[in-house]
Structure formats: structure tokens, C-alpha cells
Image 1 (tube, rainbow, N blue to C red):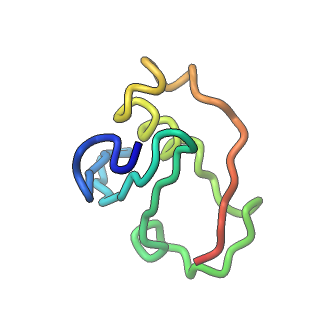
Image 2: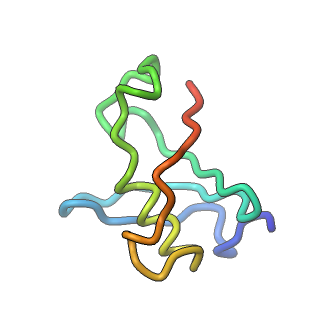
Image 3: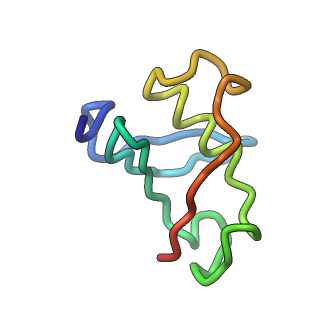
Length: 80
């Protein structure tokens, strides 16, 4: 399903900060967030990024998980 939330952009709050994300596909959950919003350069390797919280919030937003602890711990991270 393309744009599973029905919105081209969504906002999630993590530790008191709001991030703008785009959730693109529900079948193979893909989301985009700007590297600079996470204080990253975009050249980091997947192992350097702690994306568990973002994945959990996204899964909750798309109803793929009822609570954060239900989300899978494996993720593909693509360089921007």
C-alpha cells in the first residue's frame, strides 16, 4: 500500500523533538527522514545509526505494531 497513513508526510515525536517523516510503503515498510534532522551527515554506515525508536514509532503510526516492543529488530538502512 502506497502512503499507508494517507499522508505524504507525517510527524513523530521522540524524546520531546518532532521529526517529519514520509512513510512510503506498508508491504515493505519504508520511511524517509532527513539526515540533518537526526544530526547526521548522510554518510553514516547502518551500524552507526540507532534507528530502533524511529522504526517503533513508524510501526505504531501505520498500525503494524500496537506497541513499540512488538516491532522487529532487523532493519535495512540505505545511504542517502
